[in-house]
Amino acid sequence: MVRKSSGITLFILINFLFLIDELKKIYSRFIFYKKKKIIQNKKTNKKFINFNKYIFNENSKKNIVITSFLNIFEYLHFEYLVGVYLSNLQKKKVIALVEKKDSISKLYFEKLGINEIYYFEEPNLFIRYMNLVNSYLLLNKIKNIDEFLKFKYKSIPVGQIIYSHYARYSGVPTINKIIPNFFTLFSTFLSYYAVFGKIIKNLNIDTAVQSEIQFMPGAVFLSQALKHKVNVFSRIGKDKVSLRKINRLNDIYMNRFHYDKQIVKKLNLSSHKNKLVKLGKNIVKRRFYGEQNLNDEIDLEYFKAQRNRNVITHKKNNINIYKLFNWDNRKPIALVLANDLTDGIFERPKPLFKDNYVWLEQTLVEASKNTNFNWLIKPHPREIKNSVKLTTKSLMSKFDNFEHMKLLTQPLNSINLIKIIKVVFTSHGTGGYEYPIFGVASVNAAESIYTGLNIAQNPKNIFEYKKFIKNLHKNYKKLKFNRHNACLFSLLFTELGLIEFPSVKLKENLYNVYSNEYWNDLIKIYNEFEIKNNFDIKNDIFYKSLKYQLDKKKTHTIDIRYLEKYLKKY
Image 1: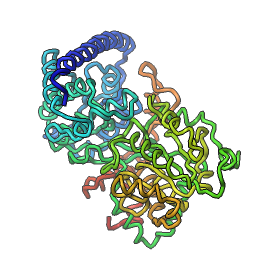
Image 2: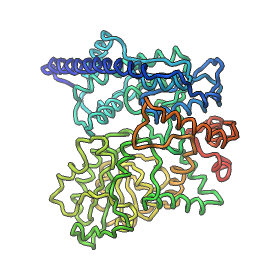
Image 3: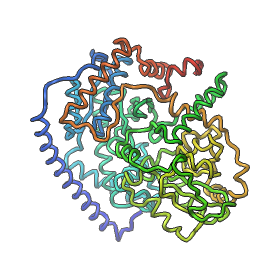
Image 4: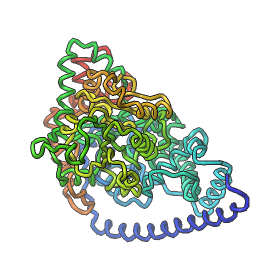
């Protein structure tokens, strides 16, 4: 809680930040109108309505809304086509929701022949300022950052939404006190909360397509949608795709790759289990050898970095870590995999630590005390791309005097690592299921997408976690885990749960709104789609898989071919 003596100073500072935000909005409007004129001058009336033949074009009591919170064609392409699939299956009309100053998304939907495009924007200046005052009155009662993270507004975890948003866009991965920016961000939340509530009600929306759900304004729309009992379908994957259906407010920050664990348990009972285990292992093996990338999300900057990086592989260099760091080769090595420090902070139910940075910091503190192990620390590859201000490298500088702890500065291929390490630590990352496939134990500090499958070690509290690290050299050989489950989860994560989709291929340069490159590619994709499916969307594998998901009320789209062959009773 802010002291009375500093309350006036805080309120003045909050008003100053509000003024800066308003000036930025004025500048943004100026840029918008400038771009709008350019787009209008280059705009053509040519429509690309090929996939629209599959949209349900009659009036319906309820509507499907395609949202646009990231106005890049690669995202819009997926949102639009998911809307097409859902419209055909649910027999509902499709409408689009676009920010008023988003000329790119508006142009995109117009060229596709989407007739009903609705716009959202923040309310007028007076209402925005009143929201700032209300924000101050509500947040001023909160005593500390832990209480702030638990703060909810009308059952919505606003504290986490604001914390996550600030961390991502400021590059600061951890915050130890309530800062003035939280007040202005909460006022923004309040503005969008009212706007989206009215839109959802007035447009009779009961289904939404939304892939950007973490940050504002997308997180606010998702919150309101769930409060209004709207089913939100959120895409995961890029070349191959699945849809995560979100329909509970409690799942607002549930990792979208949080598949139903019953699938793995049923695969375990399959007569084809050995074959499936081998398939799952080979998927990760190809990735570890650098022959196959993880099909997770659209991330163009990361895509470029991956193509350009110089990776040490087993074929190029059998590097000896012990000699490189002058380590005692009688001591085993533990690997600490830093999680993404500013993205997906709360996609980890039941965490032991406040955020990913605090987990990493506390893990390193405990590691510094256990000199019976050598510790190799690997930064997350997105730290540079996300402009993280407190990086793994800067954190490791505090441990320069500990010779048994070293930062892995050169990207070493994972296939090298499994030969030398004995234990992997990750808060909740994919390494926690990948390394156990090859006999390396893993340790989590939060509920992960593979929790409940006996794959990773899961200390119950911070005390137990620290004790685990303290005694690691005594117990690491006794750790038990289910390698078969790890292999089967790998198969689910990369094959069963991701289906062929009429996707656009990622390129090093974004599609340009002023060129015809995307539209020409869309025509090619449509023609290939039609020929492959004999000019009927009902023959499409993704369509069949999505129909099964809707009919059976499942959380994820699972490849129908695997379901029919291995999971008939799912």
